[in-house]
Amino acid sequence: MKLQATVLSCALAVLASGCAQTPPALQPSQAELPLLTLQAAGTQQYECRGAANGPQWTFVAPEADLYDATGERVGHHFAGPTWELRDGSRVTATVSARHQPKGADSIPWLLLAARHADTPDKLSAVTSIQRLDTVGGAAPAQGCTSATIGAVTRVPYAARYVFFARRGA
View 1: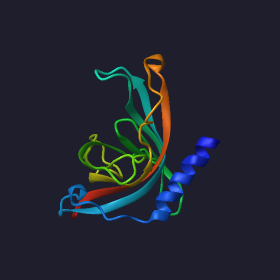
View 2: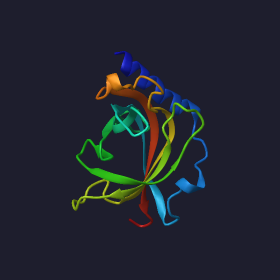
View 3: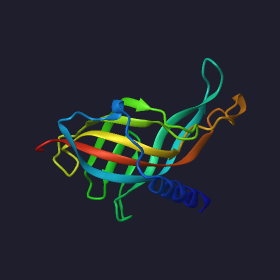
């Protein structure tokens, strides 16, 4: 219950903060237009793993619910990264560019290039995805030691995802 309250608080913080200006590096092509905007509220999962410079928290996957402008849950965001709507349509993507927002506790803003399955659906026209206005989600600064290798932690986060499609698609 505490996690749900924290995630909800993060999502409300994103909505209350308004939309900051998107850095130029995260702008999609001028041939693309916004198709869909969704709010995400969930967690970023990290695992404590050994590394050359000592144990560190390593990103594993996101787990978040997706909400439309009315607050209705319309989908889910998970490993891949993948965004899946309730009707079964889905899109995966790879990171093209990133921008670190102010505040060490927030995950980077991203521009992602969409990859698709061969099935036509609601998200099949998506060419780019932005992750913006992030709140929380950054890996913990402490707690990963040689004694805790293999431990998993989930850090609450919220973000705004904007899905773009080519003009005329």
